[in-house]
Image (cartoon, rainbow, N blue to C red; front, side):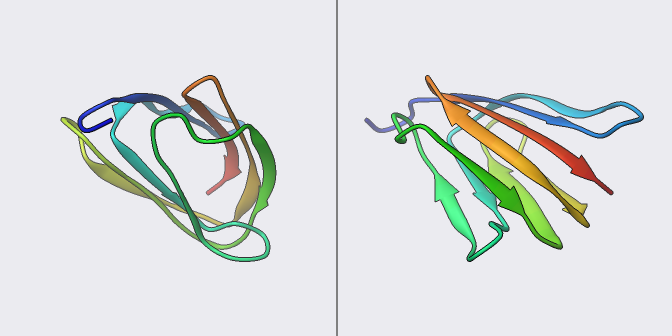
Length: 82
């Protein structure tokens, strides 16, 4: 579905780094980088050192050291160390 959005929240122990909507989220998965689009299958993954980036009205990126991510119901929630 073109233009469909997913909710993205990126949290660190200190604060919320980003909360908004995106059409695409790229993540540095523990085994390999991967991309999340609308209606992605549910998953939980570790994150390795790299960059989380997203496309949408508020495109951006965050460099991370490590963490984990949960994807379900068109929501991406990442808990990271920066």
